[in-house]
Image (cartoon, rainbow, N blue to C red; front, side, top):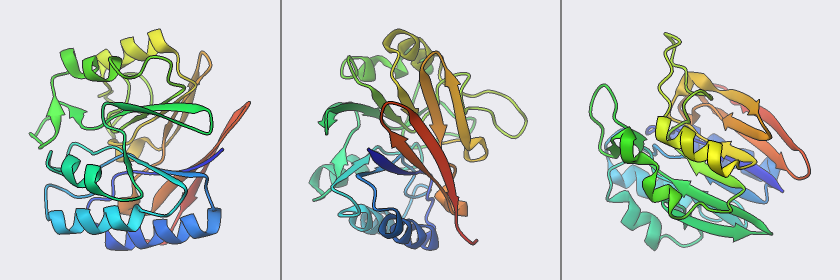
Length: 217
């Protein structure tokens, strides 16, 4: 299965246009968006971006980011051609995906965040047996280092991942943490930020192959 993965659009219309062209070129089986359509507002931009994502592939999986207002969940639920994966599990072509949006507490408050102590609880109730986790918030220790090299991943997610042992964990949030880590049979992928025209292609099969795409900024 070929996945086209994007995250962290943050109101960049050119980034959305590029991502749509990339989907036309790559012809993925599924498109996955990891949140932060906008930076707090306007919701009109987020709604248009949701419409743009709709129909890019047979399956379009979405979780909200910490900078998206919580009301975006209502728009995702109503949108045709988009699957809201927040605190939900779905099966596509025999692969089980579970997701959670938002982030743990940030240095400056954002609309969609929770304390790390309980962050993973709602995901734990839906993620049993999932092979792929679709997150905005990274797991502690993997693709979670900011420019100062400080790690800002979630400890509660780390405990959950260590127990569930999924094959693939997708996360965004940390724009500068693009790349892939591999540990104990799990691939941890950050596609980079669509804000600066970054995305990833994941070939998910017996092996997991990851490559990155870069548009002109």
